[in-house]
Amino acid sequence: MATWVFEGTVLPSGDAARVVFGPGEIGEVLPGRYGVPGLVDSHCHLTMAAGPNGPVLRDADFAAERLGELAGAGVSVVRDVGGNREVTLELARTPDDSRPLVLAAGRFLAPEGCYFPQAYEPVAPEDLLAAVEAEIADGATWLKLVGDFPEVGPDGPIRGSKVSPTYGLDVVGAVVDLAHSRDARVAAHVNTDHVSDLIRVGIDSVEHGTALTERDLETLGARGGAWTPTLCASVSPSPNETPEQTARRKGRSEYLASILPLAEQYGVRVLTGSDVVGTVAREIDMLVQHGLSVEQALTAASTGAQDFLGLTGVGNLVTYDADPREHPEVLATPAAVVLNNRRIS
Image (cartoon, rainbow, N blue to C red; front, side):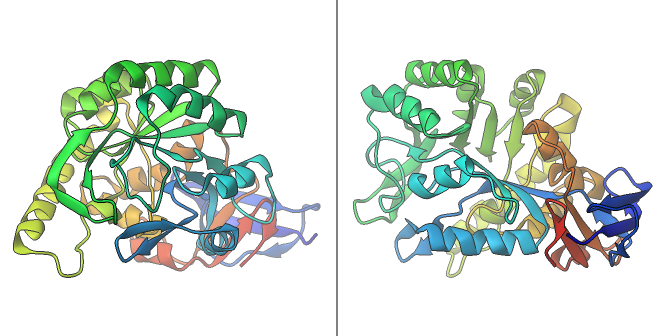
């Protein structure tokens, strides 16, 4: 195995460093003078693709191609938060140095009519704890709870804009308790003020969270929780959106820009997630547009996420020719990527 050497500034800390990857102390110098110790995609769906009536599940080949794209962009860790459980849990059970590390939640946990029908198998409330046990037994370290959702028709499209809770709080609390007793954690999709109740019963990370309040941040932060706002999915323009949809989207964007800067103040770990439609680089840029400093956004995409997930960036590095703190656009074009001590690009 070749030895590679990075000499430059390590972000987000800004420290000057010399980092060696490989068996010796002397090797070829990596291009790029600014480096980040591996990016983290904390809200990813490796087996989901856009379909005509909503997301659809894909197979192992699709996931492998997606992981290759993520690796080339400098992503060293992926938290998959719902999809084809046979594929994602197998990836989580079988780490491979040639690809990013995968942490998986397995299936989406939602009852009938409360998620996209081509992307999940419904779980009735009375079957929820058994489903949780099965996911954890098969290697899930996270669980993906669909906490609220609009009504969905049997063929897929969302009907109307009203969003309702999916499960009662008693069963959600039991899910959280069971997960924690098995050393697993719960990530909850939620876009209404139901988020307050879900935080109260103990969820570990809020996904999307477009209705989070300052009080919610205070409660979540007090126990070291996280928030993945997925701005690429939440506030990006959609093709053929109506004027009413545009107004709602812009309202979400303005609200998130007012609340996101408060997260660090209350100890909430902000994370970056591509969802189905974005990239980590674009999510960093959008976090900055919504009130975070470049350093805070880079932390959300790297060392902060690694710390929250109980990992380190050792053996991983993505480098850039220019300083991303001054030129965020360079995040989309890495100079070099080292994954598990091997240069892959």
